[in-house]
Length: 366
Ligand code: FE2
Image (tube, rainbow, N blue to C red; front, top):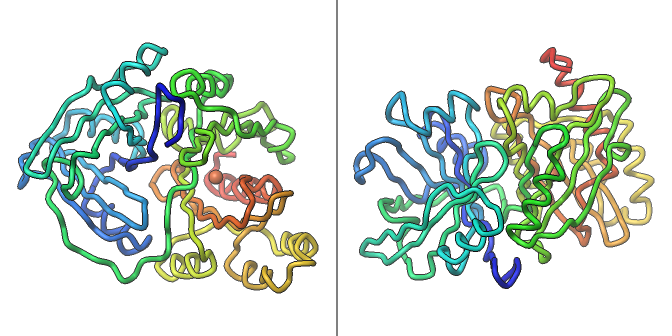
């Protein structure tokens, strides 16, 4: 268990995306990202206003929800933000207590605790707000053995085409200029999180753009929430672009952990997932950084797949970033493999952000 004694967290329960077409989104995560469909809720299970598809890979659970009518919270969210993350749901041992503690410490109440039951048992769930229209559901489910939540039916579909994603490493939020510390304090005060790393704008800058980031975490690594804000610079940063197109703060990227990034990324590429590419010169630096580890780190293979590598005192990590997976230039994915390093790829930031700037240039949003 992690978090503080008064706000214990068992981990991320699932991430819910509110999207324009949940059926097609489920198909995308199934066929492009190697998830399998696990549960479904909709008209057939008694829902009137929305439909939800649960897709699963390793410990990662994505819930894809679409509206069945032109009004209501899901349709409103999609109209404002495009497809995006509505809920980073946290699993807690006692949802009523977690909600009461969070609200007493200044969290915005979104849903009071509600008990729902079916033949599979009992779930208690509440929700608090975070940046923008994003929420954290607090889910207590140890007395529940059903496929997901009440009203969901199981879809017994396996997928032998998994790409090897095992868990969520971190989930990053973008907030407005001047708001990073506000939200960092929010996680500190409400959930008892601490600041794991603080990247200042001189560490995350190119010639043209800059940003700042604070990584808030539960102290053990089950939950890591970096929070970015734009920093003043010559041109418009990727964070500004996000805030403009998402119409406010929200989840920017989800980092998914793999134990075999070469396999994961080549599978994803084969299935049409597009990634950012840094210039070949970047790999000269990687080759010298990993000169003593040639047996373990195959720089040619990394270059071929455009995978980035970074090294620190504790070890190294391999990572790659997708292009946005939504129509608007907002949400994207990171694939990460860690070998001891608990970092976030500081050594890659400049090359990566220059790659993002080239994409922004093409979009006319730099
Ligand atoms: Fe990341």
